[in-house]
Length: 131
Picture: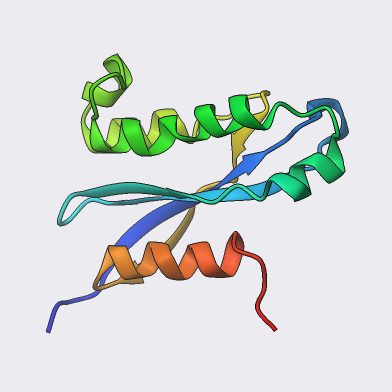
């Protein structure tokens, strides 16, 4: 049995009209130091974003959201940020910014399997509630 390890996570948010401060949760970013883990899961509910701003450019928003998993994995095209150590990538991605894509404050938890934890967080914080 694996021991519990601490992880940090943030909710990825779409803020279609920054001046209004309204947002839609669109993903989870999770980092664990031991063993090293950094992943993002994205699920954009376009209808909810359009309810906040009917003029929102969903295609551009989706493209920008896909940068999160690309940077996490260090994929080709992720630029210099994708080549940083994992923890530095997490902190860069969660830095406070005033743009259409933002993250929540960083929260902590404990788990034995980060892949299971990120899916659970995605279901709780991002996916539409089930009946």
